[in-house]
Image 1 (cartoon, rainbow, N blue to C red):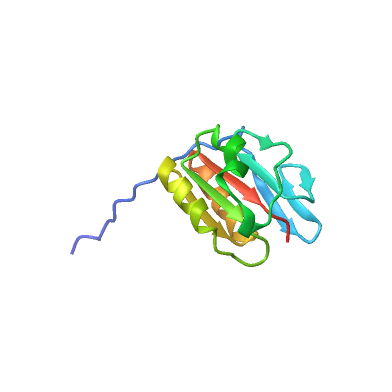
Image 2 (spheres, rainbow, N blue to C red; image 1 turned 90 degrees about the vertical axis):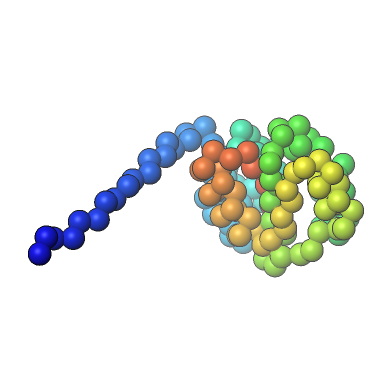
Length: 131
């Protein structure tokens, strides 16, 4: 009887060295690359958006995301703190009209999602609220 041989295929991906990486979420703040953020922070794979216009989650509108949307992300993940929150209904509609995905989840989950998608070379953006 001939030995069974499995064909293996490997997928190689290149590491994007210019990409921001969210390293940790803790009570101290959000560590992005080597910088600690103690306030909510908005970022794309290309950089950090300075002076994110803070608003509580229920008060968010598409105007808050105007600077972030200039980078043309296909998806924006919003980390809402320790627990996920529902987005304002009109905000979901505004993103749908633009053809941009919007997902709200805990900040830890949003950080993991951002890192995975940016590592795949996807055009993703994030807004992360501290815990």
